[in-house]
Length: 67
Image (cartoon, rainbow, N blue to C red; front, side, top):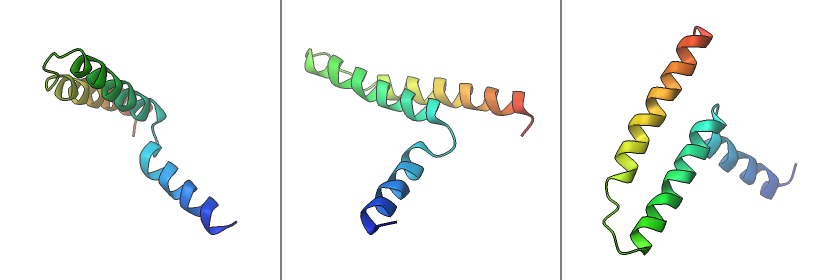
């Protein structure tokens, strides 16, 4: 494996980790924040709500798995 491949794999593991759903949720929340801010509306509230919702969903999935 080349250094570039190893680096990209490390970045992928850092960003996505064990839960691709949470990574996707964060990406969508960032996109929504950018869209709202681009429209000239204050968008500071999007990420805190996203964090609360994504954390709750992640804990719920982990509890169902029994880990």
